[in-house]
Image (cartoon, rainbow, N blue to C red):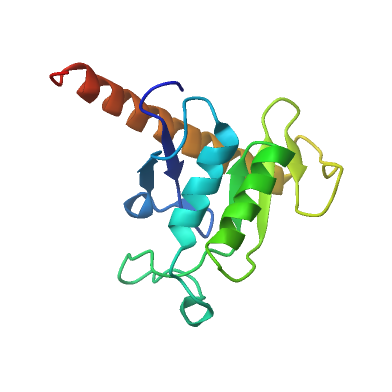
Length: 156
């Protein structure tokens, strides 16, 4: 989104939004508009320093995000998924289940598959993935607007 680039992470537990686990990331290392580099940065920051001993679901009782997700859903297509997988590798994290959902045709991409999965528009799994993607987008847009407004009112 140009200046003040922000990425978001939303968490769903048992199909329900766990808003206390949402996080936003201010993109530091990329120039404006480099979606792939931003994706790489966010995924590597999220998983850097975590090891296999920490693998497991987030603690639902304490509300912490110190565990590993069951699946990571990327907003984008094949390129964004490749950047995310590269970010995971650069963080030296163990393999994790990852997929991407592209917006135009609601295509689902998984690693090492050249073609998207065939889906039906009314499949419950696709509806959940779309809900995840749309919630992450909504959260990122709200954080971006907040960051942009804050930067506007700061002295140069």
